[in-house]
Length: 373
Image (cartoon, rainbow, N blue to C red; front, side, top):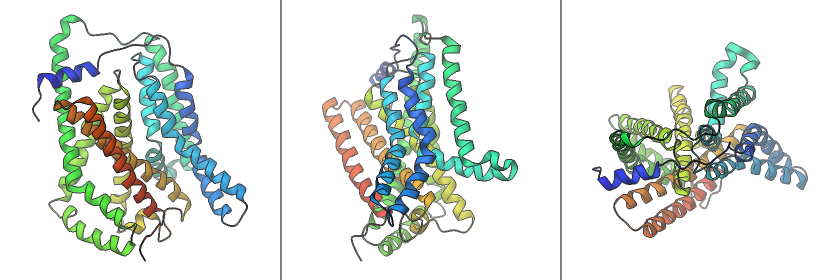
């Protein structure tokens, strides 16, 4: 898509500074940080309570529900914080905003930290265990946010560009538009060549796992073809890198509620992509087929084993992030093609709602629901 003056103007307008005075309140980010630190405990407590509830009292069921609520609250608390500071552009607000984007992506980051811990444990022993590594990283990030933002510039906003920098601002806006168009093209190509088929294949499992396997083998002849698979992986790399460039820029600027959801879903998907490729390509390297049994932990689905509960949350939020990111990407595409905002917003909402319903059905299949025999 060619860049037009209107697109550049819109891009520059969304990036305008709208500073809020004062330091960021602890209520914006500490609750999300506390839930993040509690995430491993909540996941393990859910698993223990779930299995105890099958043979014990109703109290264990309540315990499982409470633990699941804490685990699922992390991205929601992070989104609440992001929305609260969406107009702030102080140095500390930028640091908090980026920390909260990481908190949104806690489910894939938790699994990723477990894999990193597995690599480090032979070298460092218990000091590199998954909980210690997890808590250490988040405490370090919290300290950096606490002392880094105010220490650098107090409560002052980032310095604004002067009027003489107009040509530089325009050049940066044009560069941002190019990166956005690269990202958008890569995402559309992924959706068309892989994602729709991949998710449809998961949806088939809601009827029958044997049907899902037959569909999977048929589809693999396309997206695992010798010439096609490198193309799809390359598209994922391009989409991830261009998305991270966009994310780094957009988290420096004020935004609206739509943009908060878009950048938060982007952060989740970037972390999910790293964790998911590590798991699937690593399994294939070891000679393990990354099929439905691999994804769900066996015939009983994702509730069959302890670690799989974390995988279920990770999958569920990933499907929701895809729905939100694609829906809001469609909204931006429509707006830049001069569609009325009301119509663009309506199209985005319909896309997100429809995609979310499909996501719920896929999650049902993942936990073992079957409509067929």
